[in-house]
Length: 552
Image 1 (cartoon, rainbow, N blue to C red):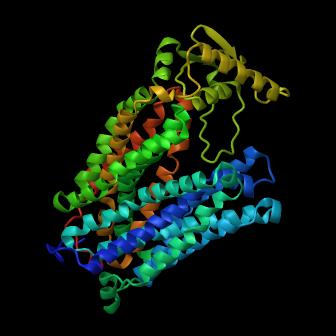
Image 2 (cartoon, rainbow, N blue to C red):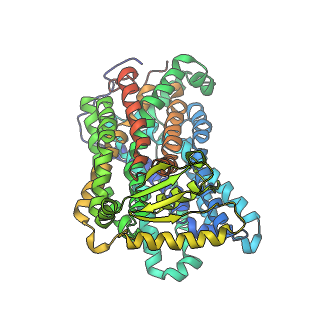
């Protein structure tokens, strides 16, 4: 793309310019708020809409609904990206926010399975699909709209506000849920109160639509429309012509894939690791992460602004590299500061799984539908879910797996046997007793948690997120010609974040179960981040001085 100085501004931001950033960012915050509610309230959704099946299956179907929202994000990018390049940025992301808000509102009032039967889960899944499609169109529209309004020397700073919205949306959803839960009590919240955050979205929708209606169309789009240079077939131009497809692929593998895994590791996997592996109680873990997010969020704008001076690429590449090199020591420090008892027990009474390698599966199960029933899988799954390190020792074929805790041996069982349920209960009881005797804690001791140091570690992880995420909206906008920008930038962003990032927890758990080390799941984000660093350094060009008005 051609380089040009473009509109340079050193004057204070005008009221209209502030409105552009505020309206775009606020609407995107609310979209993320809506999107995250289904995950945060999955337990209550499962009991309400999937009560026609057993609780385990119901929860699985709820997670499938949540995953569906991530899965269709790239398709939303294609659908609304095309509209954005043909009809305009403003009206397209008005449509996306209306779809998101109404879908969320419908979930809040949707009768449960007990009232309308199978129609309830069908409508819930349909609403989740609409939410995913809407989110797929929202981000590209907001980022493009803000970037095309921004002065050339402030594009990174302006679009960085869009980058804060996913974090703020998650934060707002947690705050609203906490406020409703504490104000009405747990019993009422479980009965009907969980619907309030969904219903409240109609107010947020009204505010967002009203503010966005005051905005004007992007000046870049207005110019190319006036010149008759808008694309008649943006999908064909973006993905069927090699000169543009090549940039899409570089944006995916040289930018957004690495950005996604660093983001998900710092904001989501860290919370999963605290609660599921280190057994920190949910309230404490949420508070720690929330404080880290509050401290770290201003760095989105800091690094976005810095990218206007030194370039987007150096900051994003440095973020990928530093994060990849730091994940292991940081997560080990997190364990040391939040569950030192687990650390001590691991050193004193190491665990060994003795099993036939041929019956050990790679337990990749992103939506919870697969069953792993071999004795090896049962042993590894039990230890991985308990957040325990173990070594693997090969056993002869035909033998049941054993778990050795210190000098004590626990026998497993065949999950396909007729009496598997009874043997499973006995196994769980024996393993729990053995682990307790060896000093392994069932939960992290709140009295032993070093809160300040744990928050420091989490804040560092969030700052890595801000390095890779703060400048990326401006860079994606600048990589593509104006006539197909909305379409082209949205797809690699949502494939990177929806798929590379979205599969991180499931992939990490599978790696942990296979290797036996609670930190080994970090290899997934490390490898992806390093691959992005190499591809980005070799093939992705700096875009800071790109001409956003360029049409070809």
